[in-house]
Image (tube, rainbow, N blue to C red):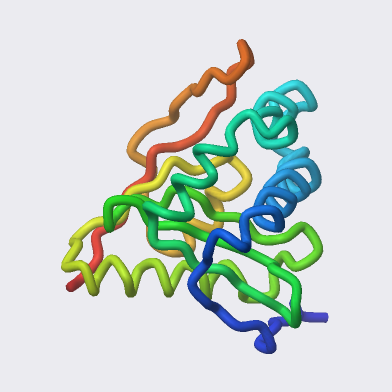
Length: 166
């Protein structure tokens, strides 16, 4: 049996009104999807500021200063992705219940198209172990393994890059 591809979702620009749902999606996705690649302490360190609300300003800054795409299925947000400075993929999450339905691919295409529109020639990203496989399928290459320390806990991610045509 093949993987079901969901085509009945729409991609739109994100706005401030989406923030509460984006924060919930972020926490739920990391808590569920990333547990195969990160332990409980790492996941808690990753999501703790969002769960407590300590980083509300960084969420506000993301939505107001970055190019934000949201995938919506009916009235529910099922994914989001952002492009910072025209060529850096900063946030990229697909809802835990909507994995492997083509949502990440559509979000990625939207970001790459925006980067091209801005005449960028490369895309960069700092990618979790969990998302690395997806970005490799999009022709990204790992430049370096990185260790990020959050709340005294080390998390491994990857600095990745892709050349794009204008």
